Image 1 (cartoon, rainbow, N blue to C red):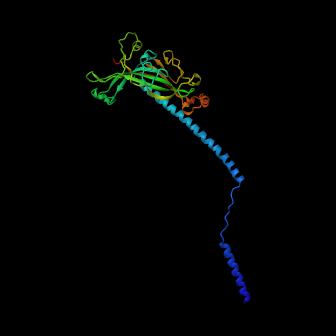
Image 2 (cartoon, helix red, strand yellow):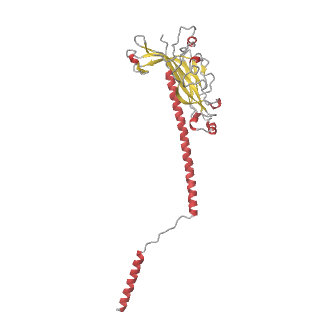
Image 3 (cartoon, helix red, strand yellow):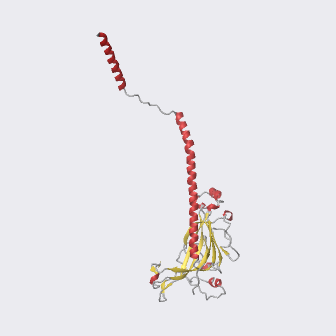
Length: 321
């Protein structure tokens, strides 16, 4: 009996010891990375992340350049389409400086100064007005018995130089237009002409239309109030070695280049007798993406940064006199 009692006591002691041991909280592991482990992890991270960063920067830079090229191409194409639609209404296209003393910049107005603005394309056109058009807040139909009408207008396109830095020169195309008065159904002035406008006079002496129209003069003593407005920016103005366009020549000897022998990104070849003009526009996408002369000089030989468009347009307007 004593032996059994002793055995039971030992068993209870063993059970209690096991219970107490199982109730003890586990010890926390306060271990960490060693300095060597941290250094190895940092080196591995640099080796993986640095190429990824370089790749991302290259992708972003390439995308920026391609976007600049696409924007320039779209703007240049839109500009030449606009000029072409304008020019299709021409009744006469000047091929020389016959009236340059009578138009900006020599005849002053805003937006075109003598030191940075030169006329490139100058022509007379029939300006169509729909009866619903408004001019100076007045509706055309109110003066034409609800009919469409037209007036003659003198239009000039300019190349305006901008010096971005001492080494980077770009340009923009400006447009100037003055028009004749709108006559009402009673042959009275409905809407006045643009300030300074004077209609051409075909009774002037001369054996050709060119001789007659080269005698045109603005209204004496009246200053223009019509500004030269910007049509498109980032036109290339660069020396000949930057010009990679092989089409920068006039078609034949019947055409005269205006401005003469220009290397800039906007000029025309004009056959006044046939009312035909070949337009040449060259953009400068590179000027959009860099202000670094070193990078500019490195990339300027790539013609893709200088999108060029040409278009031949025939004036379809007629002198309804």
